[in-house]
Image 1 (tube, rainbow, N blue to C red):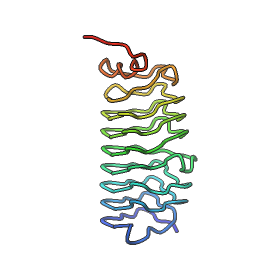
Image 2 (cartoon, helix red, strand yellow):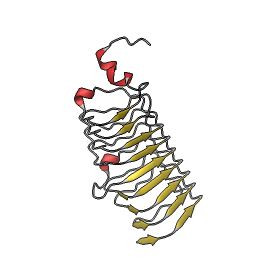
Image 3 (cartoon, one colour):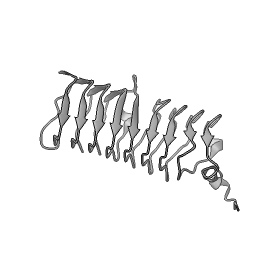
Image 4 (tube, rainbow, N blue to C red):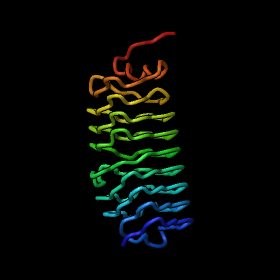
Length: 188
């Protein structure tokens, strides 16, 4: 089925099924989709706001130009999504324990979001923006972070030798996260 310019508001999809199909220019407001199977769904130019999207099954789910605002998005395996056109942005979301393993998501914008223990291993995050984001225990390994902006991010610690960081932007206060691997003492 195809849905175009529809608004879905205050619906608990743990009690009623979301119809499988393509959703274009649709809004999901204050919906509970936790533990829902969204396999093979397609979301194009959609927005999720004030919704619980934790522990979704995202096998071959397509997100194209999708916006998430004020959402709880715990434990999602974005690496299971359909890679074609994969693009989204996150504003004031909790993405703890999610995985973007090997995702090609250059230019993704994360704003005022919690990304605790998120796995970005082998992802392309070139030109990504982490604006005022908590990246405590986030995993960056063999990740393309070229031109990424970490200037207001905090809590990150990763080995710059095991990632591509050419022209990435860091703040002076956050730079210690790049030196943790060396176990050196930095004094002010």
